Image (cartoon, rainbow over all chains, first blue to last red; front, side):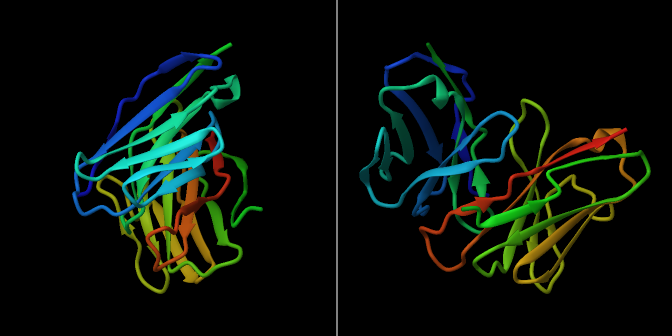
Length: 108
Length: 117
């Protein structure tokens, strides 16, 4: 079974800092990854996907994929209190596999 | 706008009754939909994979006779919690994705908060 692992946190960062969220995966053949954000009591929402090595930037978010080392990261620049949520990385194959999620707390 | 619609968003029922939750893909056909359950402060847990026109595939530990899944069309899957008990109280979420593309993400419904009294 394809597995995804994340540190459950919580990860606390001060407002304005860079938050770095990491995810490792077991299947070397995995091609693409998604990052979802889930606010407490809400369903996950897609924030980014990445399927090639390197970085992908979207506003304050940067996803980084390193297939050789089998990890994918999400960087959030200029963190805001509204970024406080649980971040899930996921493999999009048919048996959608989610990490347990990392809880991020941005301290004002 | 939302591409997956889930209804109802919140339901309260008495112990022993059944509850049906609907999940619709709004602008695409979904041969596969997924049902999740999430207890407070816990991870999203996949319950079952709903396959259009065939039986659902349940994850280990999920009772198929208690959580009935019907995927009768390419845009609708339903989850029925039969003979609900207080321990079934949870947040149920469905998701669906467009098929055939590696960059096709899952879209989630807004979830259904079930409270069994």
